[in-house]
Length: 260
Image 1 (cartoon, rainbow, N blue to C red):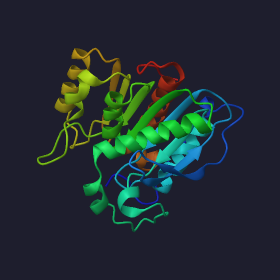
Image 2: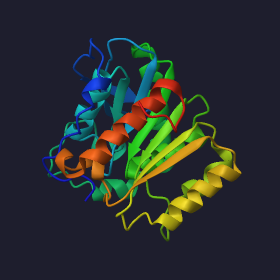
Image 3: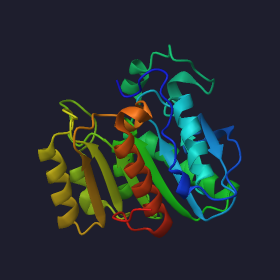
C-alpha cells in the first residue's frame, strides 16, 4: 500500500522554515481542458516565486496531500495538490473507505497531464509563483516524470518512487522512453528496498536521461521501502529529512543535485 492509514507528512526540517510561514490551505474546484471539474487543495506561502503542483498516490486527493501542500507553504513554496478522479468520482471529499482502484483503472495519462496543466495555470493566477515544479508520489511520481516531457514551462520535477516500468496492457510508455522529450530538470527519489523499482530500472532511467542530456539527479535510500515518505516519520527519519532537503534545495535554486 502506498499510503498507510494514519500517516502524516514528515515535518520540514526546522532550519528550513522561514520566519513567516504560509497560510492554511483551502479547497478549490478547477476545470480541465475537457471541461471536467476536479478538486484541488491550494496553500499559499507568505512570499516567494516558487510553486509546486502535487500529484498524489493512487488514493487521489487524500488529507495526507492536503497537509503536505500546507507543509510546502510553511517552507515558502506555494503549493496545490490535485485529485485525479474528477471524471469518475466527482468533486466531493472522500474518506479512507474510498474504493480508489476502479478509478485508477480509468485514469489516463493524457487527462492527468491536462489536469496538471490546469493546476499550473491556477497556481500562477492565485499566487506569486513563477517557477513551477511538479512533485509526485508512486502513481504521481510517474506522472511527475511524464510532466517533464509535457510542460515546457516547468522549472523542474520531483518523482518519489515513481514506477519506471510499463506493465503489460498499460497505456503509454515508461519514463525512460520519454526522456528525449523531457525539458525540465528531474530529481528522482527511490527506496533501496522497493521491489517494484529495482536498481536496474533506476540505472536504465538514469542512462536514458544522460543520453537525452536532461539535467537530473537520482537518489536511492538504502533500506527504505516503497512509500517511505508516506509512512511514520520515525521509521525513516534520515531518508525523509534528506528528501525534504533535496526537494527544497532543488526548488530554491533549480539544481536537482542541490541540498538545502
